[in-house]
Every structure is written in C-alpha cells, then in structure tokens.
Image 1 (cartoon, rainbow, N blue to C red):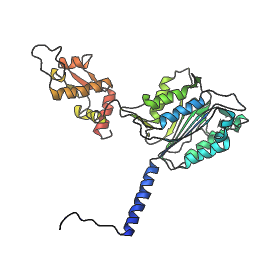
Image 2: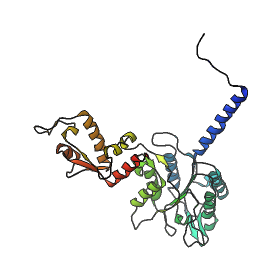
Image 3: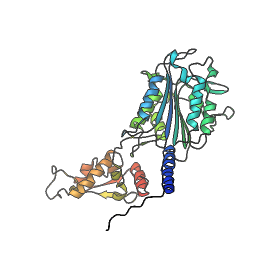
Image 4: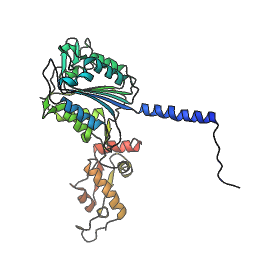
Length: 358
C-alpha cells in the first residue's frame, strides 16, 4: 500500500519546536512592538487651567492607534486630567514611573507625547503636572531625556506641545547644544523662549501634528516619518508664529504611520522601466490616448498596450513626477507626438525604484 507517510516527532523534539515558536515569535513581536504614552492636562490646581490639551491627547491617540488601512499601529496608553479628581495617574511621581516604564521597554518605537504647561528657568525645563505647587516642581525635561537616552528601544520619540518645550534635549551647561543618543528624536511646539498657542479648542502644534499623521505628511509610498511631520508643521507656520523645534540623531527615519498611497506601489516601480536613465524623454503619439475625439485624419488609433502605459504616465503627471515637454497637458503631448520627462521628484523615485528601495 502506498500513500503519504507521516512521521511523529519525538516528545523532546516537539518540546524544542514548541519552545522555538513561543520564544522566537514572541521576541519578533516584541521587537516590532510600538508603545505610546500620551498625556493631556487641562486642570492645574496652582496654575491657570488650559482648555484643549485633553482633546489634543485624544486626537493623537485616535490617529496613532491604527494605520490608514485599519491595521494595528501603536499600543497607546493615555492619561488625561480635566478636573481635580482626574489627577491621580499623572501626578508627578506616577507619571515619572510611567515614562520610565515606556523607555525601559525593548520596542521598535517608544513614543511620549505631552500637552500641558511647560516652564523654563536657569536649571532647565519642566513639564508641569496637576499637583505641581511651584513652577520648578514639575517633571524635569532633563530626567525624561536621560530615560530616553538610556532606552533599549530602537527609536525613541518625544513630542511636546507646551510652552518653552524647545529646551528639551539641551544640557544646562551646553550653551544650547543638544545631547541625543542614537535613535532619539525630539519634536516640540515652540522654541525655548516661546509660548505654545491654542486655537479653536486645541493646540496649534497638535492640530498640525494630527493633520500630518492623517496623511498630510505622507510620501508616495504612504509612509509618514518624524522628518516629514516636522516639515509639514514647519511649512504651515509663518515666520512670526511659534516655531517648532526638531532634534534627531538617527541613521534612518522610521515610519510612524502608513496611509493609503496615492498610487499603487507596483505602478510606481514602473517609473524605472519607463524612464531607464536620467534625462530620458518618453516618446508619445496618438496611439497612447484612449479617446477617439479630437483625432485628425491619418492619426494612429488607440492601442490598448499604449493606453495602459499612458494611464500610468498621467498618474505620474498628477503626482508631479512627470511633465509633458513643450506643451501644457499630457493629452496635447500624446496627440502632438511629443514626449514627457521626469521632474526632479520623479528622478528621485526613479533612482529608488532602480535600486530596489521601493
């Protein structure tokens, strides 16, 4: 009798296999783990209360929790205080313990976000907790920086929407120089000598941060990085407004969130096939245009293969990757047997595709 033969593993080997799946897969998940500690404080017993910080922290949680396709992103823990009875988890001591726990974890990303009062004096900057009786009774930014610098996390990100938060990362005696370990990024709402503004029930900085994370700072592959978030916020604020501060020490930016890209990746990769070299011009003719309307006598009819290529080229054009040569629109380029070429941005993505980085 012939057939498929099965072989049972010895008990010892089965135990090894079970251990492998439990241990290795757990470690893989831990390495990819993303943790976020989000804090929003409106109520202060000894200082003027704020009005949009709790709302801001909840907005950040909502956008960080999942990627654009609905898949899990950050595991968020949020502490908020809008009234006197809420201050327990974010009194100075328990908040410090939570930050220590965040930065002790061996994660892919450990992210700390704070919206509330900030204070600065000669000894450095402070994040004020609801129980702080004096301005220097808050949590020292230097302590938070020390925790982050010692963290085993691959990427440590600190985002502060508070007044004077730009001092974060500066050592008291370093004349403004920052001290950041590898993998650490700091993004703040304002410089060390500026106040952070509120508008329409929330912080101006956090409003732009959420807008960036929702897709305003995404690249053509749908990835949003700390660098692109900063660029989005920086470009949105005028020279006379509060200025965001960005400090980082990384080899490569990590993606904070993925959104649905404006073009499919397999189509974007075709840019290196259609434009095999820098300054290459792709020749067009009427057979690339699918519409019959507008054709003169003797013009080539639509060709199915060419019209499919032209559809991709038009997507490239809408994304500022490709421009027609000598005419205004791609339609005129095709019907007039002109050509199209890459923009500077298009050449950037051509090189990425050519080097298998897409």
